[in-house]
Image (tube, rainbow, N blue to C red; front, top):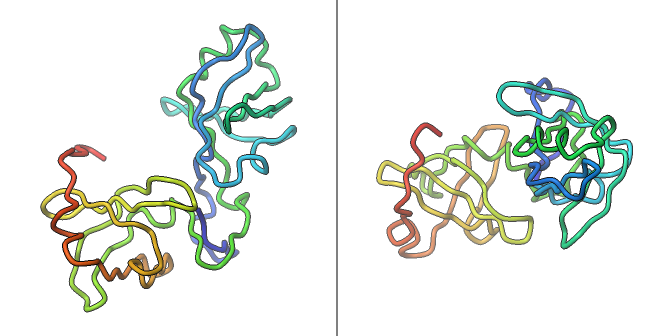
Length: 191
């Protein structure tokens, strides 16, 4: 999910996660990726360069072949030709620079632009801040951290009336009971 990037974006040096390496596939070093992009076919193609990031390490990798199985890309990466080499990448995040993200239609937002946004009701009452975004383009949910726990707010036009990544604010018009009934029980310590 994303918003239109501009050259004045002050976070050009940052990167966005587009997938996570889930497991190896076969004996020749192929890797199954859990995509975290609404555009997996565009993002995971031959010649694509990404950073494989884990434990503070950032290693550039280049896709040498790709095929999709049940919606997930199975990649071969240049220089990774054994199962042992592939195993070292399990769990790595695949990241691209923010400048490499494509422009999105109006009304769509990249997850990283929404995390950290202050959430308030349309009358200005503070609700909390976005801790995470779950789901894909057609059914995203904001995980909003409040003083009493986390609530799940559908990223739908009738509820999220104004989404403004520039001012880091989201105004919501919650249906009756949404804020009270939707508190999750899990805690996200340290995140």
